[in-house]
Length: 303
Length: 304
Image 1 (spheres, chains in turn brown, orange):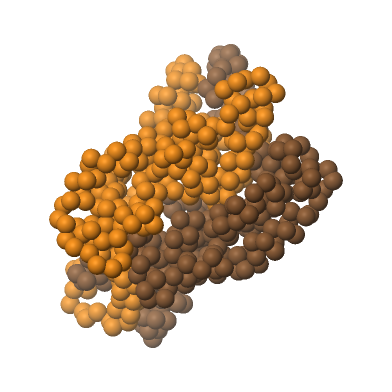
Image 2 (spheres, chains in turn brown, purple; image 1 turned 30 degrees about the vertical axis):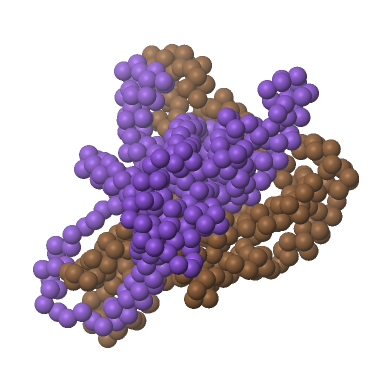
């Protein structure tokens, strides 16, 4: 990366002699000159991302006979949807999709609502020990990786009949909680109390104040919290694979693992299945990328 | 923007509202979450620590065995290997991810064409499930790479990376990095955009080369972001599980078995209590790293 800037250097030094002409490159002064060498290198780097995705799509579209040669990069000819048809029925894709959507939606909603509730209570009662200590208590979960408590959780969820997607929603929400509460409370402290007081003078109860005033104000943080919860719940393999005991109720990522042996060398079926499992998140990302990028940046920098 | 984990002491609020009673609805907002949290995380944690002092196999009878499990762990080569692997892998991945993400971020904040489209593409891996992309790479490592090796006549490429006990970890680093670079990249982009442009102008006038500007100006100014990325990344990689399942399943043999994996396998292997001791140890490691994170990021805050 530094090497590719070298050719531009000679230019710039020449320019320095005549500062008034053409502002130098990058973020300085004028934004005129495009760094084509950097552009080229970055475009080439996208291959590392796009090639695996291309392989997934092309393998999924191949016929059962073409796929046997094991050549990942050849174009599918003829284009065949057999892989999708077989994967759809073999892995019971509609059920898997429904479970994944349920778990993801449940986790996102539960995380946002519970964390916002708790953060609001904590931020507005910071002078009370119970609330202040609760904050640190919830935050302490950031220290606990899932594997540490996984085994007892498997037993407990099994004993109380939560060895199913609902149990995963509860656990996933609890693991997202500390990070989310941290973001929400930091944001809540920046909202002036006067705003709430004027709502109260107008006769609003705390419940109404929360839903009509505070929750809408929290929207940007809710987006960040929701995006993290979405990425975690939709993509996670470890927790659902351990908690959900009935394979018929498994999420899409776990299904790929369960059917690994049955895919055997039917690579078109396997890749069609992978593609169907990744596509919803990729499509959702392409439509919401602005918020995803902003949300992740904000969340990671603050968390 | 650049604040981190700020634990504010509500001085003003305290003075103002210490006399009033807490409205009951606030308990309604907080208590259900506290109860659920306690049942879902604290109770299992305590149960786990409790059983780490027993010989339980996860069900049926058990006896207290004191520190036996903990003593056994420190002389168990399998556990030692899983920690060595997990730490080695995490360090390697942190290095690869941060160098790649930083350079990409420098490129993506430069004066380039297709900036938006490039950024979109580079972030895609973040939204893909680790285990699924691991299966895709598994196919590439075990079929495509050896095929390419055979046709190019490069003998060491002809056998699958995943089948080589000494090199399988490289594949895991590659795939983990593939997935982890976007998040790191976005943080670096935020960091680079926070550096004011006139700093470079001044450096340019003083005759600093591009490389010097990158190493002497950019890097120190985004040092805080580097710290965040290294610690967040390291914490995440220590829990490595999904991608390893998809690539090697911990093999060949037990060459790529992570700590998380050995804990979880303990459930089926009848090593419940033993692996709970391992989990307790792992917890301590996680706490130490988190405390390190807190002290480092807070230090950065006072600096900036």
